[in-house]
Image (cartoon, rainbow, N blue to C red; front, side, top):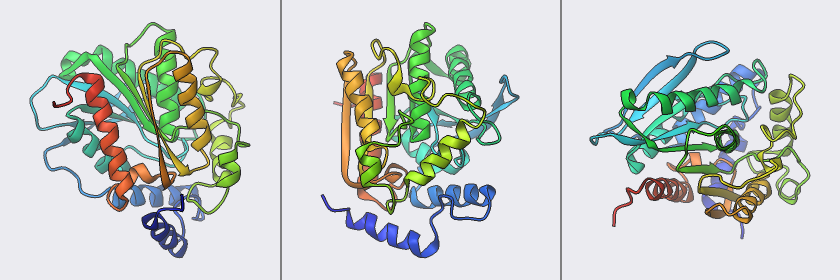
Length: 314
């Protein structure tokens, strides 16, 4: 279908102002611009969510985390959230409003990982730090006031990549057990030659050249980008993984690899809900304040979490 009019208006405004994706002179400026954009386009923050910043021990040094708690009584299910930004430009704080919305709507405790960014810290740093955070949530569940039997992973874009990779690692290493994985237009493969890359190479916010830059940053330490720890689509098996929601966007270079991942999960016997949002671009999920479909997708994600945790109202 044609691109959504709300999206086109947003793209026009970005073109006039300069897109926050690699449009500034330095990477630091790009990071600042991206964080400001996410905060501005997410909409209103719920008033009954408390946010606490802390650090946990990690193999590369302290790992910064942000914990979001709903106003209701616990213990709550827990979601480990990994932000997007190509492993290179996102921050947990920049996603505060969006993650608080997820926390309130799903009635869950969310732990968001402020993993170290590439190119300063290439693979496997982000992968390892998110794994450490997942283990920490599972092991310290009682102190955190969460139910260790109801734990999920979630992320958008590069964060969706990390969430999918954590689900594979948890399966292969015997836990932690996961009730769900919510993958929002995830990076699942390093092959930039799909049809959706060709159709959406330029002009739709995330571009092929930008993804090439992100991959170069993340694998700058010489990692094989087709390793399943980076390209989960390449895993030898997708069996015995937690139920998944996979959200994709029509005008997104990552559309085809996200949908291919959903098919792989389904073929392996994993319960999958796959939804393509027609007329949408990459990033629409983090823009519920200005895109109606973004708000719809956030609601879909929180409903999927509630179903997985057994808390969906009748």
